[in-house]
Length: 78
Image (cartoon, rainbow, N blue to C red; front, side, top):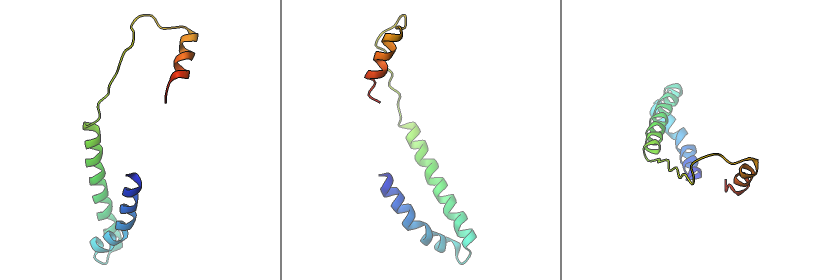
C-alpha cells in the first residue's frame, strides 16, 4: 500500500498546488503541505490507537547464561 500511496501523492501534488495556489505557487505549496500534514497526523493517530503490544512471558526467574543467550539469539525469527 505504500507504493500506491506514493503514486497518489506524486500524481496529486502538482495539480493540487496549481488548484489551491490560484496563481500563487508559494501559497499552493503551503496549502498542499497543510493538507498532507493533516492527513498524516490523522493516520498516525489511527495507527497509534489501533496498535496493541502483546507480551508473552515464557518463564520467570533467573536469567540464563551465555549459552542460553546465544540459543535465543539464533532462534529469533526477526
